[in-house]
Length: 278
Image 1: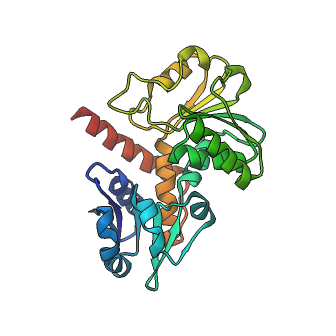
Image 2: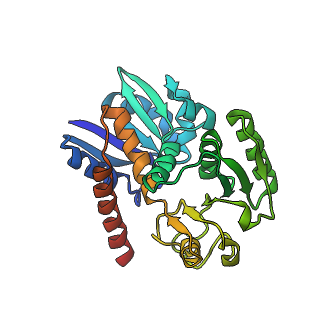
């Protein structure tokens, strides 16, 4: 039986085993997936164990960066981001991938939302925002970044502009009428701080689509406010699901249908609901 894992510290509350075990079940694949407590200082001494006992694994922060020196090769997304969340073990070598961008684009596509020619306002300048800014610009969107830290926001705008070949701007005074899509790439509104929103409700009027990378709660204050303003709203659950399933596609050379994705997402949402009820 092939063995897979998610590495991290802490790791107790990860949803990765829930997603991957259900995906194996849906596909009828005999494999196991475990959470593996891995402090960053232990990675180097355990790398050979990982290389020879696992068929693949996922990494959480800060292992997404710490793993890089141990990889034989990375895909283009991982090379640009300087981090990986998925590692494939092949013939004693480790290969790194970043699947977060795929997760974002696939979750939009599932909802029929395109990016080409759209005006996107992205809130945040951290790791998730970095992925989303690059994917939006590469897909032909006009991206504006709004972040609390002006310096990191401007730096991200310049970096994405260089790599994607499109103008990316920074603003600290966005106007709602200027955007087709708003994306929250910050943790503001995540449980347990569910009474927080990264932007005022009055700003949301006139924005047709609002995407929040947060998936717990299922409807953040931002999404509830956007829905009440008439916007189409999308949370981060399917982004989470798709980035995980992309890892399985890399490991096992398989594909998931929309029906299978929805079945897995329903299973994960049920687990989130169970945890919330505890």
